[in-house]
Length: 486
Image (cartoon, rainbow, N blue to C red; front, side, top):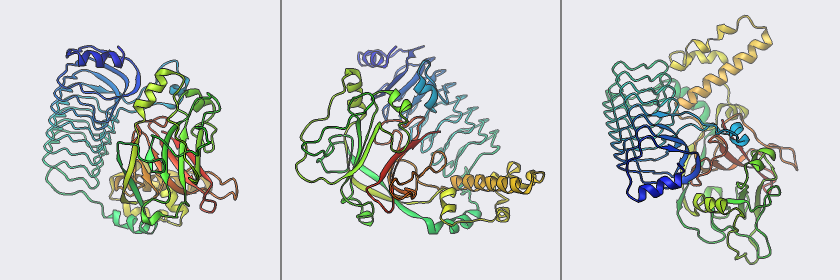
């Protein structure tokens, strides 16, 4: 069944969808499926809008491959449900190569939900509400529950091996018989109400404090605003005689993603990135444009990024339509205009590789200070390298040190902030990848904006990746966009 048919049947009053097979659907669907029966259903690679509603619904024994960020599963029956960790649609080179998306329940509301024996391995549940949820014998290996709320949740006999509960609230939770080998509890409120802390946090924080920057998360309203306003999607400023940017490969209009008025940023940043309007357009019309013309790379021809001065009269042309009616409809649904009305300031730290490039250092011997921490178990034991020659030993010790510090920084939240943000440090998905300025050959290491998948604009950069708008610190007109995925 296609997603559109499911929506029509639900809206017509049908509630019994036992054994449903929902085919691959890339659309971001605004859905309300409360009080429905989806037991034994198969949600095959679906996109749902943030806040999808499954309250009081039955999804027992279902198989789900979907992004369900901020979904509502209050009092839902999810017993023995399997949340698949990835999908790769057949016969599609783009998805075969670049998509392997994990099921996401990030910030979902699972209050009082029944998740007994549910397969949640590697699923993103960060920030989720699991108050009073039953997770008896659930499989949560390597799941992400950072900052999740699990008041009075029952995790009896659950498999929590390598699960991340950093800064989660586990007050009153039951962990009897749970497997907690390698489980991370840094900063978490434990069942008895105490807070798990590592004294080594202060050691590392002291070394990183001098590299701390401010970053800002956008505050938006769902409307378009003026032509020169900062916004996601909608109508950008174009000069009166200027045509909408087109992809040179599919010859269709590119999708407008972002406009930042550099003269109307937070006061600390006015003039920091220059002046004018920063604009990003990106081709989303044909997956071949992305694959064959390396849309992920800086200076790719299927992206259009610039800083333009809004002089003269602005074009009054409306957003162009895509020749394919289905693609045009999808873009209208997927890219609703949102004006940026404010900015929320926060602290941002570099990852260890960026910190080290700025002069941070920790001698290998200093790692002994971390010896009491769970992340410094036997896999990180330097004696494992005694048989290597001196050159290789040092290289492996450096790699080991980077791994140890990166793991610890992730546990203690001393890392770049995730999600859409202005300025700060890049939260690299892979290694750091600063482009080279074509004018002066310097690294373009000034982050203007970080563009996360499914944040404000429900679009995925490959495998739930992240995009980066970077600038040359010397030549502010030189900007580049690239994205990385896992």
